Amino acid sequence: SWSIFENRIFYQLLVFLRPPPGHSFILERDTVRQHPERCSDIRVVLECTCSMEHVLGYSLCFLHGRGNELLQNPRSLVLETLCTGFYLNVEQISVWVQNLLFSAWQRLPHWPRRRLTLLPCSRSCKFLVSSTSKEQSCTEMFFAVHEGSTDS
Image (tube, rainbow, N blue to C red):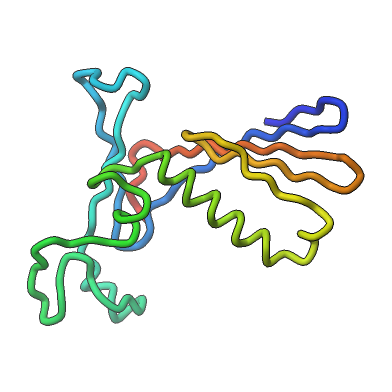
Protein backbone atom coordinates (compact mmCIF):
# COMPACT_ATOMS: atom_id res chain seq x y z
CA SER A 1 0.00 0.00 0.00
CA TRP A 2 1.05 3.62 -0.24
CA SER A 3 -0.08 7.04 0.94
CA ILE A 4 1.02 10.64 0.45
CA PHE A 5 1.36 13.25 3.18
CA GLU A 6 2.72 16.68 2.21
CA ASN A 7 6.17 16.04 0.68
CA ARG A 8 6.52 12.45 1.94
CA ILE A 9 5.32 9.24 0.31
CA PHE A 10 4.81 6.18 2.52
CA TYR A 11 5.09 2.66 1.11
CA GLN A 12 4.32 -0.60 2.87
CA LEU A 13 5.50 -3.74 1.11
CA LEU A 14 4.81 -7.37 1.89
CA VAL A 15 7.83 -9.45 0.84
CA PHE A 16 7.31 -13.20 0.56
CA LEU A 17 10.42 -15.21 1.40
CA ARG A 18 11.23 -18.35 -0.57
CA PRO A 19 13.62 -21.02 0.62
CA PRO A 20 16.89 -21.19 -1.31
CA PRO A 21 17.93 -24.47 -2.98
CA GLY A 22 18.62 -27.17 -0.42
CA HIS A 23 16.18 -25.70 2.12
CA SER A 24 12.45 -25.81 2.79
CA PHE A 25 10.19 -23.81 5.09
CA ILE A 26 7.77 -25.67 7.36
CA LEU A 27 5.06 -23.66 9.11
CA GLU A 28 4.57 -24.93 12.67
CA ARG A 29 1.49 -23.75 14.50
CA ASP A 30 1.99 -22.65 18.10
CA THR A 31 -0.85 -24.68 19.61
CA VAL A 32 0.29 -24.03 23.19
CA ARG A 33 0.26 -20.24 22.60
CA GLN A 34 3.62 -19.73 24.26
CA HIS A 35 4.07 -16.90 21.76
CA PRO A 36 0.71 -15.08 21.58
CA GLU A 37 2.19 -12.35 19.36
CA ARG A 38 2.58 -14.79 16.48
CA CYS A 39 0.47 -17.65 15.22
CA SER A 40 3.30 -19.91 14.10
CA ASP A 41 7.02 -20.51 13.78
CA ILE A 42 8.78 -21.18 10.49
CA ARG A 43 11.23 -24.05 10.69
CA VAL A 44 14.01 -24.26 8.13
CA VAL A 45 14.72 -27.82 7.02
CA LEU A 46 17.88 -28.77 5.15
CA GLU A 47 17.26 -31.04 2.16
CA CYS A 48 19.49 -33.49 0.35
CA THR A 49 20.68 -31.99 -2.94
CA CYS A 50 22.94 -34.85 -4.01
CA SER A 51 20.78 -35.62 -7.05
CA MET A 52 20.84 -31.95 -8.10
CA GLU A 53 24.61 -31.47 -7.79
CA HIS A 54 25.49 -32.49 -11.31
CA VAL A 55 22.35 -31.19 -13.00
CA LEU A 56 22.22 -27.72 -11.42
CA GLY A 57 25.87 -27.32 -10.44
CA TYR A 58 25.59 -27.34 -6.63
CA SER A 59 28.98 -27.94 -5.10
CA LEU A 60 28.03 -29.88 -1.96
CA CYS A 61 24.91 -31.25 -0.33
CA PHE A 62 24.05 -29.71 3.08
CA LEU A 63 23.31 -33.15 4.56
CA HIS A 64 26.09 -35.22 3.00
CA GLY A 65 29.79 -34.57 2.86
CA ARG A 66 32.17 -35.78 0.22
CA GLY A 67 31.81 -39.50 -0.33
CA ASN A 68 28.07 -39.27 0.55
CA GLU A 69 28.60 -39.70 4.32
CA LEU A 70 25.91 -38.16 6.55
CA LEU A 71 27.23 -35.03 8.28
CA GLN A 72 27.06 -34.94 12.10
CA ASN A 73 26.04 -31.29 12.45
CA PRO A 74 24.77 -29.95 9.11
CA ARG A 75 24.70 -26.14 8.86
CA SER A 76 24.07 -23.61 6.14
CA LEU A 77 24.64 -19.89 5.74
CA VAL A 78 20.85 -19.38 5.83
CA LEU A 79 20.63 -21.07 9.23
CA GLU A 80 23.59 -19.13 10.60
CA THR A 81 22.45 -15.75 9.24
CA LEU A 82 18.64 -15.71 9.35
CA CYS A 83 17.71 -18.24 12.01
CA THR A 84 17.75 -18.90 15.72
CA GLY A 85 18.36 -22.62 15.86
CA PHE A 86 16.34 -24.03 12.99
CA TYR A 87 13.66 -21.30 13.00
CA LEU A 88 13.51 -18.10 10.94
CA ASN A 89 14.12 -15.05 13.12
CA VAL A 90 12.38 -11.93 11.80
CA GLU A 91 14.75 -9.61 13.67
CA GLN A 92 17.78 -11.25 12.04
CA ILE A 93 16.06 -11.13 8.64
CA SER A 94 15.42 -7.40 9.12
CA VAL A 95 19.06 -6.70 9.99
CA TRP A 96 20.25 -8.79 7.02
CA VAL A 97 17.93 -6.96 4.59
CA GLN A 98 19.01 -3.56 5.97
CA ASN A 99 22.68 -4.49 5.50
CA LEU A 100 21.98 -5.71 1.96
CA LEU A 101 20.02 -2.53 1.17
CA PHE A 102 22.78 -0.28 2.52
CA SER A 103 25.46 -2.16 0.58
CA ALA A 104 23.45 -1.99 -2.66
CA TRP A 105 22.66 1.71 -2.11
CA GLN A 106 26.35 2.61 -1.95
CA ARG A 107 26.88 1.07 -5.38
CA LEU A 108 24.08 3.02 -7.08
CA PRO A 109 25.13 6.00 -9.23
CA HIS A 110 22.49 8.36 -7.77
CA TRP A 111 23.27 7.81 -4.12
CA PRO A 112 25.27 11.08 -3.61
CA ARG A 113 22.18 13.12 -4.65
CA ARG A 114 19.83 11.15 -2.43
CA ARG A 115 20.32 10.03 1.13
CA LEU A 116 19.32 6.67 2.56
CA THR A 117 18.48 6.54 6.26
CA LEU A 118 17.84 3.16 7.84
CA LEU A 119 15.18 3.52 10.51
CA PRO A 120 15.02 1.43 13.68
CA CYS A 121 12.47 -1.35 13.46
CA SER A 122 12.94 -4.86 14.81
CA ARG A 123 10.23 -6.83 12.98
CA SER A 124 10.43 -5.19 9.55
CA CYS A 125 12.89 -3.24 7.41
CA LYS A 126 12.17 0.48 7.41
CA PHE A 127 14.09 3.16 5.56
CA LEU A 128 13.82 6.76 4.37
CA VAL A 129 15.13 8.13 1.07
CA SER A 130 15.59 11.92 1.03
CA SER A 131 16.46 14.15 -1.91
CA THR A 132 18.06 17.58 -2.00
CA SER A 133 14.63 19.02 -2.92
CA LYS A 134 13.31 17.88 0.50
CA GLU A 135 11.13 15.16 -1.03
CA GLN A 136 11.09 11.97 1.00
CA SER A 137 9.86 8.44 0.60
CA CYS A 138 9.52 6.15 3.58
CA THR A 139 9.31 2.42 2.93
CA GLU A 140 8.57 -0.40 5.34
CA MET A 141 9.01 -4.01 4.25
CA PHE A 142 7.23 -6.80 6.11
CA PHE A 143 8.32 -10.42 5.64
CA ALA A 144 6.05 -13.43 5.18
CA VAL A 145 6.05 -17.02 3.96
CA HIS A 146 3.27 -18.64 1.94
CA GLU A 147 1.69 -21.42 3.99
CA GLY A 148 2.36 -24.76 2.38
CA SER A 149 5.05 -23.35 0.09
CA THR A 150 8.13 -25.47 0.56
CA ASP A 151 9.43 -25.59 -2.99
CA SER A 152 12.40 -23.45 -3.96
